[in-house]
Length: 212
Image (cartoon, rainbow, N blue to C red; front, side, top):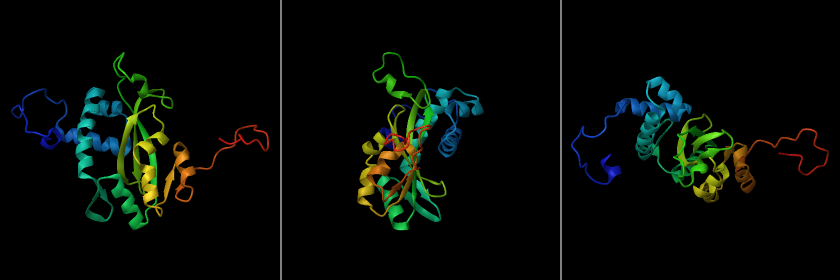
């Protein structure tokens, strides 16, 4: 916490607002959320606190976990801390990456706040935050980040987080994505695979717009 603040604490230990959840429970709540993507409201019900308490706890713990990095299966002591580390590891070990975005419901921003509508997800029909997660073929998380408001499309996040640039730097890395990353698969057809497009119902034969 001292490193995150960039200075020593100004108040004595124990001063200030009391946490409703002890540190151990805050860590466990963050780990459960990252592993299962349970909504904050569900975790709040489990701990008997408000949703904002869980949201605050996860927001506090996630940066601490990210600084420590993600453990590598069967390689104790080696951790992935950056996106570049993940692609270097996949290139060296021949791991096929799985890239996906998850949405978590968040409290609606205050009225008249600039950019308030940016959090409204068209898919979820609620206020959310999106997180890009990269895992290996067995579903083990290797990296989680690229947090952005729910309205931002997955493909847009690819450009802002330089994920596309990592594919250029590592031409042998392969990845599997869902329909939300169709643009990435089109840009790197030999590296990124996406599900086949579905044909529209009752579309006339030969129609160039028959696939979606």
